[in-house]
Image 1 (tube, rainbow over the protein chains, first blue to last red):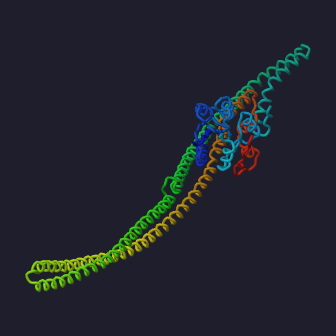
Image 2: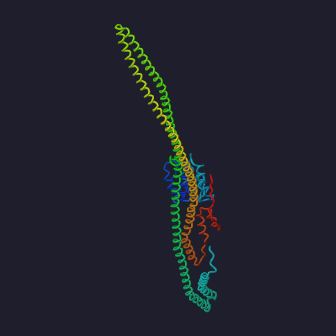
Amino acid sequence: MAKTIFVVDDSASLRQAVGIALRGAGYEVTEACDGQDALSKLTGQKVHLIISDVNMPNMDGITFVKNVKQMPLYKFTPVIMLTTENQDTKKREGQAAGAKAWVVKPFQPAQLLGAVEKLVLP
Amino acid sequence: MNPPIQKSPSASRAIAVVHAASAPTLGALGGIACAAFSGGSFAGIAVGIALLIAGIAASIPMARARRHWQAELHSYLQSNRSFSARIAPVWSGHIESSRKQMESAITALSERFSAIVQRLDQTLHHGSGGDGSGSAGAATLYARSERDLASVVESLRESLRAKAQMLQQVEGLQKFIGELQEMADAVARIAQQTNLLAINAAIEAAHAGESGRGFATVAAEVRALSQRSGETGIQIQKKVQAVNAAIVGVRSTAEASARHEDETLRGSETKIREVLGGYEGLTSSLENAAEALRSESREIKNEVYEALVQLQFQDRVSQIMDHVRANIQSLPGVIDEHAETCEREGALRELDPAAVLRALEATYSMGDEHEIHQGAKVEAPASHEITFF
C-alpha cells in the first residue's frame, strides 16, 4: 500500500514537478491549489505527509498549517514547507505553526525525496 | 514634507507668481499703515488711500495670474493622473497576461514531462519483466524450454533402452529355436529306428507263419506310426526353421530400427542444442538490449527531472511579476495622492519613490528580489536549501 502525500501549491507546474518526483519514488500524491482548498480536501483519509507552499491565494501556507494542527486526525502529520521564501522570520513562523522542514524552491527531486523519507509517517 | 522644486522652469515660474500674488496685499497693508501712522492727516490718509487703491488695482491682474497658474497646475496634475491611470493598467495587464501565458505553457510542458516519465516507468516495468514479459520473461521461457526438451530427449532414450531389452529377449528366443531343432532331429531319428525295428518285426513275424500273423499286424502298425512320426519330425523341423527365419528377420529389422532411432535421437539432440544455443543467444541479446533500454530510460528520466527543476523558474518568475504588477497597479493611487498634496499646498512637489519602493520590497518573498532591490546582479536562483526544525 503506497503512502499518500498531500501537495498544496497554487502553481500547477510545481505540483506537477513535485508529483513526478514523489510518484517516481512510489508515493501516492493528492493535490490542492491553496490552503482553503486543502482544508476542504482533508476529510478523514490517511495522509502520511503534507508538502505546502507558503504564498498562496485564499489561504496562505502558514495559516493552513496552523489549521491542520488543530485537526485531531492530522495534528501529527508531518509538514514540509516548500516555498521561494528564504527569510529567517518566515521560517520561524513556519516552525511555530508546526512545520517540520523548510525547503526553498527551486528544489532538487533527490533532496526533496530525502526530506520526505526522513519525515514521512510509517 | 517634500522640498519645493528649485530648478525646473515651471517651478520657478510658479514661485514668481506666488510672490507676485502677495504685492496687492502689501500695497493695501502699506496704505493702511500710512493712514494710521500719519496721525489722521489728510495727506497721510490720501497716501494710504492711494496705496490701497494701487494695491487693489494691482491685485486684479495678480489674481488673474494666480487663477491661471492654479488652472495650469490642476491641468498638469490631472494629466499626470490620467497618464498613470491609463498606462498602469496596460502595463499591469501585459505583465499579468505574460505571467498567465507562461504559467499555462509551463504547466502544459510539465504535464507532458509527467506523461513521458510515466511511459518510461511503464517501459522499464515491462522491460524488467515485472509483468512476465520482456527479457526476464524470455530467459525464464528459455530455461523452461531447455528443461522440457531435455525431458523429451530422456523419454526417447528410455524408449530406445526398452527396445534394446526387447531385442535381447528376441536373441534369447533363438537359443530355444536351436533346442527345438535338436528335438525335431531326435524325433526323426527315433522314427527312423522305429521303422527299422518294425521292418525287422515284420520279417520275424513272416518267419513265424500262421502264429506270427497277429504280430505282423502290430509290426505293420508300428511301422506306419514310425513313418508318421518321421513326417511329423520333418514338419517340426520346417516350422522351427520358419520360426527361426522369422526371428532372424525381426531381429534384423529391430536392429536396423534401433540404429536409425539412435541416429535420429543423436540428430535431434544436436538440433535441440543448436536451437537452444541460438535461442540463448537471442535471449542474451534481448537482455542486453533491454538493459541498454533501461539504462537509457533512467538517463532520460534524470534529464526530465533536471528539466523539471529548471521549469521551477516559472513559479519564481510568476511571483516576481506579480509583485511588480501589484506595485505598478498602486502607481495611480500614488500619483493621485501626490497631486492632492500639490493642489493642497499650491506648489509642485517631488514625487518620492521611497514609499513605492518600500511597498514593493514588502511584497518580496525571495532573497534574490532583495538583492536585486539593493542593486546587486543576480543571474541564477539561490541554491536549494533545506532546514529541518
